[in-house]
Length: 279
Ligand SMILES: C[S@@+](CC[C@H](N)C(=O)[O-])C[C@H]1O[C@@H](n2cnc3c(N)ncnc32)[C@H](O)[C@@H]1O
Image (cartoon, rainbow, N blue to C red):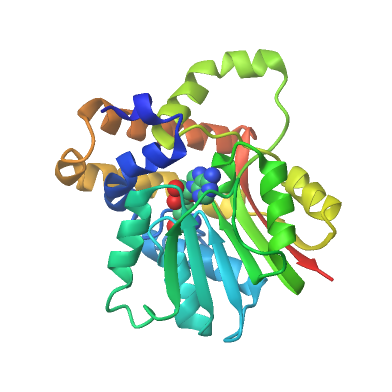
């Protein structure tokens, strides 16, 4: 099955791409945060987790919900760094299986667990988590207002939501959407059905749900070197990737890095980080 046939369904999309993504993106299925620019991708992706963790400030007593956990590396980092307990959810069975497999022997397998779940329908009780962690998954959520109200509902008093993701830098006039139609279709094929929002939108939703925004940061410049690293990985790991993806999909991935770079540079898309707490 080609990626574009499955892109519309986030569970199926990630079932389809997760193994190839490991070769393209690494253990962390998210962008890198480059302080200098010459770091390796694994250093930079872990650094982004650090930036989120500095905003989240969990401790060994914290219960953390990782919404859209990928293959679990951010959850394992949090457990390793802070001794907190982390539950990760994803609608993709492949993500959950890979997360569980990678946790065996990690030293934190007793602190992390991974469950099939959808952020649009989370079965957890009100005020059951100290931290809600949303790392690069919100762009895939069809109803972002629901994500934000659910995150607020799940937080205990004093709890904190942290979110980072690709952001719309500006609302595009219709002519611009039409002008970039092919580029957006390519991104949809490669990364799944996504709809980006602005950082202001997420901050507004946090406030509308009774949270106090503590941090709102545009980190577009620090994430930009990611695309060049992804292209390098695509070329270096081409053989392995082609055992998980068709060649046209490899080509689309490569082109999508160029599209994203262009969107970063012309102020269409970027990357943002938000932290907000419940009183
Ligand atoms: C780009 S990956 C990020 C993974 C992980 N947070 C990381 O940083 O390594 C996006 C993740 O969001 C998950 N996802 C997509 N739609 C979701 C939904 N409705 N509810 C929960 N997770 C979702 C995907 O399955 C995938 O695991």
